[in-house]
Length: 351
Picture 1: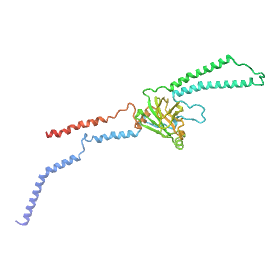
Picture 2 (picture 1 turned 30 degrees about the horizontal axis):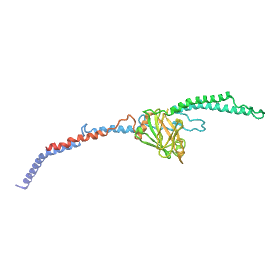
Picture 3 (picture 1 turned 45 degrees about the vertical axis):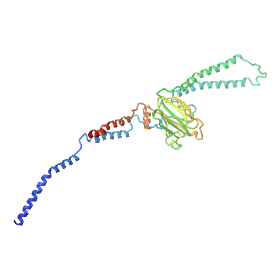
Picture 4 (picture 1 turned 60 degrees about the horizontal axis):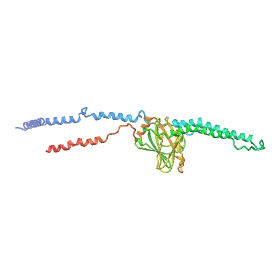
């Protein structure tokens, strides 16, 4: 056998062995290709559900970015209603039922009565000066009693006091009316020298209110020495159980346009009903001498529609009556029950 014939046979043998090896390895190669195809193939619809669920999450994030209907929006300076006015001569405009009644009583009863009495007394004095002076009465009168005059100056003042007493006692009774059971409770605490407002019915959070500097107040379009950084936010047209107390010395919570004034005494909780008739901003001040910075602890009340007030409460981390309660304990209690079969499975297998 020459070299050419041997090389041809060797080449034929190598080719045959390579083909046999390829046929033997073809099942393993096919299985590897199937496995690779399973890894790279897209998941079925059920498995890809988490990707689909991301759409609602995106929608929820978008909805959080857009204020919902009834969301809290701080009132602007155009809603300032209760504040002192330049050259004011009488009471501020009133925005509570008690305030309107008191203002009517002042304007329709007290002011006319005081005016008539003052003019009458002035007229009597002038008449006595002119009629009974020394030059016109050379001989002084010796009259000591006049029954008619004594009856008149006793009966008429009594009737005047009765007329004043009827609306006065009515107003006094209205001011001490007990708040209803469903009233919103707000506690105002006086500190030296700022106010704190707590909402016990809505989670117990507290808002601390400090006076703004004159520059910041004027820049905001608010009255100097009355504007604050955080207002006492309340619902309008809703009974409020306003409680007052103090942490150090005696303060007084007073808002003239709401006809409201109540002492804040350390260790004591005073309480009074307040119902603001319409949304707006109402300013007041501490009206009890409480120290060096007594004149620098103003009160700013912001009354909102009920829906916006509830939105503000939720923004502060509080709760509103009727909010759903988060059930976090139930899943935690259910977890051990679901894990129990898994824990007992090895023991069953061993047995």
